[in-house]
Length: 430
Ligand code: GDP
Ligand code: IMO
Ligand code: MG
Image (cartoon, rainbow, N blue to C red):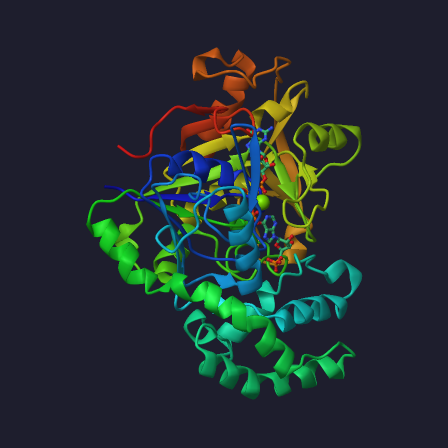
């Protein structure tokens, strides 16, 4: 059985949660492999709406195992709150349904303060506009070999030892820049019940997922963020601190790279971005407002209004290359109703030259001006369309043009936020 991977091809919020939930109806296992509660994945079905930040979006299929992989950074308090919220809503969250990697890194409250501190020390136009969830500082500690892993977090003595050794250093840093410090005793008291709550979930997920794939189970990898927020392949330094690409999966879950098969690139029918950093196709004004309103483009995690732009095939081709995209899902097509004409960016003009890839230096990227082609728009409400052929001709021509330019076959088109508003062109589990 081939594995399926879902990755964002843009700057996040492409609709990965919706598609993961949809495919999870068929999957045995859903695995998050990077990021933390900076992610906000929205799922809608049967009149209900959920925003997930840490728990994989397979949780609404009672048959699916949900895995938080070793490449994640996990805030145990946020996980505790999310489990409590799901439990309250009648969703099963026992350790038979959710497992957490013993090697995942932990986010402590001082990581969140450090996140704010690092941002506050930057000049206005240099701010990344992070979600302030402590993601960057936790990954920093991972790579500088100062971090705490889940296996240490759930162990009373190791947890105490880590904080005893580490906290003086953190407090010294915070004090230097005038930020509030943390007390060992308070942290130990706050986290004691959380350690007990999380302990039963913590396992060697690498072995479990590897065995399930070898047993022929249907496994789905759920990316968070998007390719352009990738630490290596995104618009550095305006990125997150992990690798949301398909290449990251083997490392970040502890399976073989040969186990990555179908890779579904999820793209909005236009572009959005939340936080700092240039993107070439951004536009403002009444048309951007119309799209923001029709698409309800406000951050799932922070509530910030998302910035709006035209679809950009330069980044889609970049995403195809760095992820090995085998299929494409075009999301929020319904939102473009009544927008005429539709523009697609097919190249960048820089210093009098036209290029079709993303420059590495951010100041070169900031000089890139989009080169557009125009397509006719559509005026019909498409939110009830169930069959691809029933879409208006101009809507079909638009998505087919995107697939043709990106050179990736269409698998799905989404025409509304609900699970049922999904048009399947090519099945991924066969
Ligand atoms: P994710 O982070 O990639 O999971 O995406 P988010 O959940 O942050 O943002 C996507 C938003 O678009 C959510 O509010 C979804 O409910 C919504 N959504 C997903 N697909 C569609 C669609 O086809 N049409 C519309 N109108 N909304 C959609
Ligand atoms: P999902 O999974 C959109 C952005 C932040 C900021 C940058 C770095 O819902 O698509 P961080 O807190 O990660 O250090 O912030 O990345 N960002 C996202 N934008 N969707 C996300 O996740 C994001 N996760 C991080 O806004 O610009
Ligand atoms: Mg999101």
